[in-house]
Length: 276
Image (tube, rainbow, N blue to C red; front, side, top):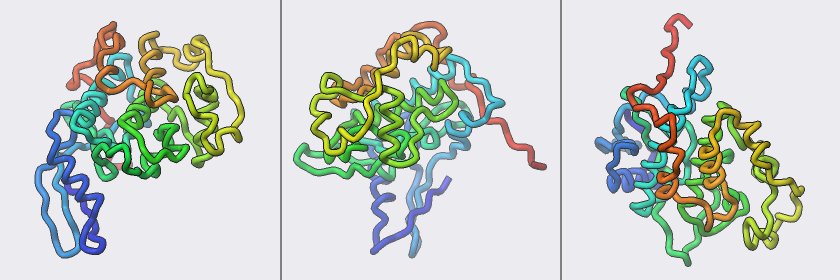
């Protein structure tokens, strides 16, 4: 498939970033850049053909998700993300429709237009990244430096969405996103996220209780204890304590029964009727 970028002042920075990062990374769970060519007004990226994405499957209620299927998609997502982080690249826009699916069932991270290399701690970074529903709390509070923990938070929200079949934290605005997150996970305290009480604007939000284990089990009815433990570890408020992709891959969730479904056996998007 061909992705077209428009030139602006002679350069399409998003496309150039994507080219740079995809050229540096070769991995079964990262989309492959096959070629690049330009015209007078466009920069064209030739990417491997991946006909569907995770969002399509989540929304297609004719497709049944089994526990092993969810486990397999999460495993492939984390493998791709671990490869990015091992190469010092932040994706910064993980969401279900950027997780593409091959005809053979392989999941691949795609759309590296917002990706960037890990910054020097003294270098400011924009917080205006990541689609809102998958945006980590440090970004919602305008952090000007962050780590791969922002990507892990996104994966945690995607994991929850796979289990629920609806978005877990669907905020209507940036302010509402914070409120929705606090309602779902509890308002953070100094014990959960040191320094949070001094963040400008934090004290304006209501105080919600952290959900009990039973409340989480009632919401995620089919989830195992290990699944909920991993989801919670990815959705920790404190980015310094949030699990990283490498350690998430070591979770006992992936080795308990049922084991991850083989990619070739995963559900596929139901083809549309041409007469519809």
